[in-house]
Image (cartoon, rainbow, N blue to C red; front, side):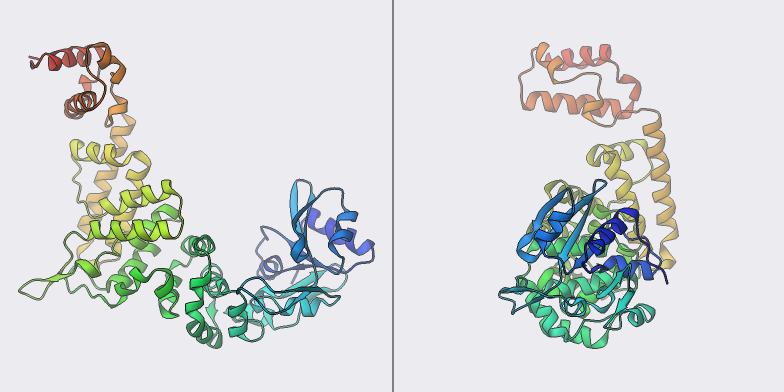
Length: 448
């Protein structure tokens, strides 16, 4: 077992130790090193007070003096250096009413969230494991340091972090810790949307997005995404499906590449099914118009989580079109390319593939083959430079104004009309023809 330590982090430790202070790498960097993963950053704990840390390094940033944290900048890289501390009662489930500096690393580690994050490393003493973190790494277990309920009442986001670590590390949550999450789940309502979204994004981008089911199992989903909870009790009595709506959604997410927009679209593409369910005379379930209901729900949910507008727009476009059965005809492919744009078009195909792979395997091969033909046709259209958007026409609104068109709807309608002709015959996308055609349209005549 060896600590993976970069030169700059080692320099910070040596500077503190040479000045007579204790200094430890703490948290995720220690956990990752034990798991033979190169750390992405290093947090450092020391018994030096913030003003003492600032005096030892030429460049520091006061990022959290209130809580004893100074960022030390070495070789353009920042290292958070925090003074050993213990904390009083938590006044708002995140911030303690007081912070007391101490000289004991073990007491400092005791306030941390999970055992796998409560280990330390120093150049002098090597690894320090006071709470069984090493054993929990070996058993692949997420377990709270000390009393689980207390940890979650201090900061309710830790419940969601437990799920995130389970997903990112492919660990299981300890039974007592999971029970505590179920008891404290309602407290997640006190956490800001921005912090919740950050954790959900990390779960979605993990290698194990199926761990999303833990949100339902622990009751967190009821307070984070209540619209999603009903999906797990909604069956799809239909020969094309073998899962409930919720199970199908989780399978779909796990079938998609690691793309945040794509995985959010996969997560929400069928969230409108519970409220769209109907049953025919043969007892078969149908979900007519569920894509529109899914869009409505997704729009509300993503705005509530404070996601950026551009991502919401892209996700909604994917949800709107996820169930469109395109054929590989040039016209059908170009129309969808025009509706989505090139990047979203290929994400849409990936979503459709993932969606179908999460259905009854007896019926998916033909559909997957059709999707592949659509992909090949789109690649051909793009490679040949065939136009599919108004912006790709060899004429624009300024040209039409010069021909006497009025700014506004008349120009938009004319460009769309010209595009329809070009979609059928790409050779018509030449300026001379389009100018002549626009003149004839303005005069109300058809070009022969």
